[in-house]
Amino acid sequence: MIRKLNLRAVVIATLLAALLLLPLYTSLTGDRFALTLFTRIVILALAAVSLNLALGYGGMVSFGHAAFLGIGGYAVGILSYEGVGSGFVQWPIALGASALFALVIGALSLRTRGVYFIMIPLAFAQMAYYIASGLARYGGDDGLTLQNRSSFAGLINPSNKVQFYYLCLALLLGSIYLVWRLTNSRFGLAVQGARSNDTRMRAIGFPTYRYKLACFVISGTLCGLAGILLANNTDFVSPAIMFWTRSGDLIVMVVLGGMGSLFGPLFGAVALLFLEEALSRITEYWQILLGPLLLLVVLFARGGIDGLLKGARRG
Amino acid sequence: MAEPLLQVDNLSKNFGGIRASDALSLEVVRGELHAVIGPNGAGKTTLISQLTGLLHPDAGAIRFDGQDITQVPAYQRSLLGLARSFQITSLFLDLSVLDNVLLAVQAHQGHSFHFWKNARRDRDLRDPAMAALKRVGLTERAMQPAFRLNHGDHRQLELAMALAANPRLLLLDEPMAGMGPEQSARMVEMLRALKGEVTILLVEHDMEAVFALADRITVLVYGRVIATGTPQEIRANAQVREAYLGEQEATHG
Ligand SMILES: Nc1ncnc2c1ncn2[C@@H]1O[C@H](COP(=O)(O)OP(=O)(O)O)[C@@H](O)[C@H]1O
Ligand SMILES: [Mg+2]
Image 1 (tube, each protein chain N blue to C red):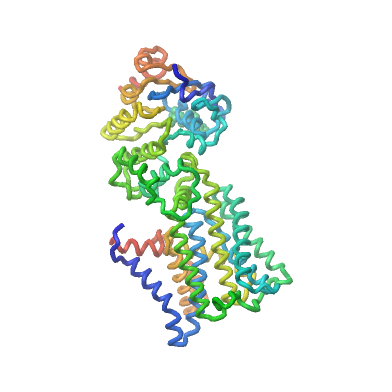
Image 2: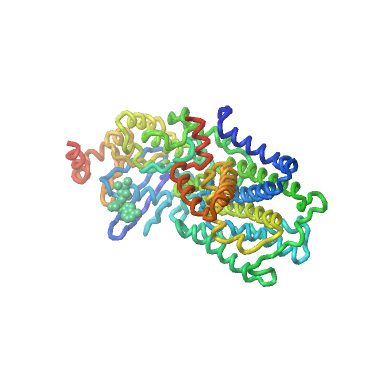
């Protein structure tokens, strides 16, 4: 591939530089709000990256990924409530729980096709939502406040906003790197083959089910990580974190950014949350504006933002 | 005669009332190019699908290299050395031409739970894939997405994928379907070069190609074998002339 300066590379470089330098800007201007907003963007971008692995590369339209946000978040919240404050214990348990949940949902839904595949993760996510609402000990509908953020024996202090921001950013970039490695590996090739033409894959000798399932589990686990961060960010977790509209938001981020593109989910998360911010300042009915706007992107820019940037290089 | 590589024994398959395979028996000997001809709807594609395991016969048995594979699932048959090209091209259209062939190679190199190493730079995959692409003349187009190729090149890519798997039996379902005369001629040349190197079961409509290439021909009508023999024997067979060849010649004017 020819490495020449193109619009997409410039946009990615600028975006990364801005993300890296953001705390400098906020400390100079004292704009605390920007740091809060961007921490949230970075975390949701991580969730979108995880969904993109299943949806964009694997072709698995999971309309229930928010469940993993909830499982990651609740694992941290519940453990913290029960007196387990160490991240070294909390995080592996939260990730393990997310992986297990993904294994169950994936194992059931990947045997089905079409609309059923969309419905099963959705049904599980809604089930998780209602179960969380019923957990009276952990706040039920009202949610659970974290007394303390996960502690890491003084190595990192997640309660420090700047440190926490950089932790989230590092995990986001790490997950993008992970997806890059995965999607270029034999495993990734098999997963993309299954998305492209499952019948042919089986005909040439791939048991596609297990590769798709593994992909779904990795995706769910990564999304659980985003849930861990989200709970730590707001010091709070509630059933709303896994409501179906949140799953929808994640899909919108992936589609808006560009399905199956490495940086697409980051573009999508930044664009969506910025749009939400901007439109909600103009009108309280911003969701009515957002809908048609997204429709336009889906209709006229098949590859999402990433596709537009790529196209601009040729044109 | 040596033990046949493929032995199909009384295969039957019904679709509702249609007998797509009707007590169908045939043998493919090692090294030969065996053609299967028959009018549209005779059950040729259905036969191939049962051989690769995409369809399951209602009755009968399939033996490959002495082993009964009737119950063996599709992906394992492919690992045993059965490779097929599809009558209707069935490629990974949104992946690159190279990726298409890489996958065909990868399928035969054990499981794909390798998460880290770059598969496109892995010589164990890349070298045989590029060799197969070279064989069908698609080297230059390796990095293009498969959907950019024209129909003839799609057929060549199908063949490259089947070849890349190093098959012991190559099942080709109308590889020349929809091709112009020039592309067909190129395909005939390629099959002639392959002949002898690998055992081939060829389903083809193009009679000229079949009679030029085949060592033996089996004629299928309504799911039944009405004749098997050398091209000369088939040409001379009265039943075949009546049921099929005559009709063909008639329709071809
Ligand atoms: N999946 C299917 N369901 C129902 N009928 C089928 C199916 N596949 C093939 N058939 C029927 O079986 C017969 C043989 O079809 P096919 O094997 O495609 O013939 P050929 O390849 O020789 O043209 C035809 O009558 C066809 O309509
Ligand atoms: Mg056919």
